[in-house]
Image (cartoon, rainbow, N blue to C red; front, side):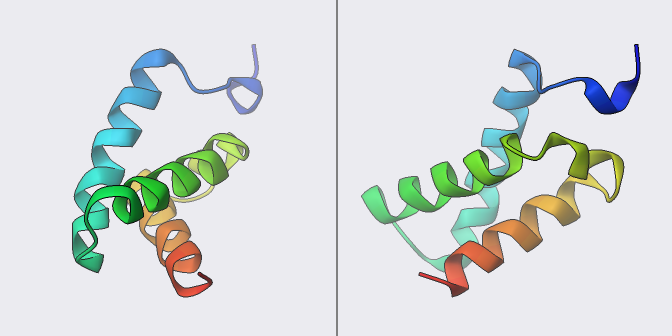
Length: 72
């Protein structure tokens, strides 16, 4: 099976959400605003899992979250 066709596993999703929670702290948000930023970033990354084969996970998460935060 080609790795590029693999989606995110349950474990991948759990780890990604934890990482996004840490990254969201950079924006000094709390409560619903923080949760919304995490969820929107998670959805953007989950809908494009092949990005993880192009750049490091940390870079993809940080860049995607920043783009979403800046565009709100």
